[in-house]
Image (cartoon, rainbow, N blue to C red; front, side, top):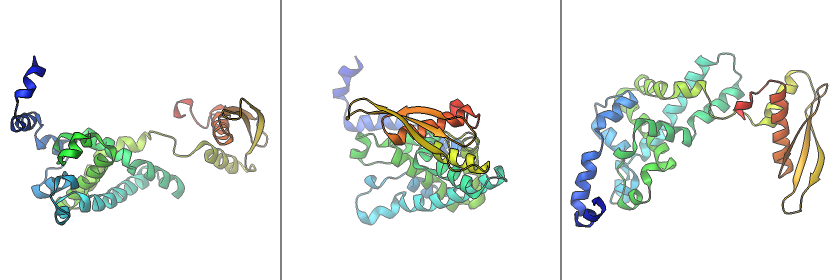
Length: 253
């Protein structure tokens, strides 16, 4: 019945219905943990370039705020990491930082904030799913952080980041190192030579080979794994080794 009525609705009526179901902007601010004094900053942070009429109006979009927010986010997360992991080396901190500030992580935060319905998009971008695109959501997340910085200063912007990123910081979504790098660091920390990867066997047709590789560390038994290429098999063998020795938990794979 509802579908039968759809053709009779004017474009204006459809836009009005969309506005009626859109959540209040206060919901977004509450999720962020910041209420904007300068509403223009908030509006600009939510405006995609497709929503403005000309290149001259790009200053009214989130692009410059995204640039700023990216730097604020990096500084805030770096500060959080140094405080949370006082014994971590620079390399580990860098890997953690890269994982936390990547575009996908920012997009996840934007989804948690409920950004999608508030985005100002051009008609074409809206029709092609712009409200769910990782690139746009990630950019807007950074733009909102940049807007909070301009609106209330670094400490307030940092509070926004702390609220959204603390749980992520303590529960990374993926291993911070690839298995071969992790195994090499583990071996070197124990005074062992660099791990050796030995081809045990190769089978299957030329277009779909299967390699079996053994990862070997001095004074430890080899760990074997298979893969469709030597590189994949080597990474898998290193992972099997790390899991067997209790360096990695199997759930981390």
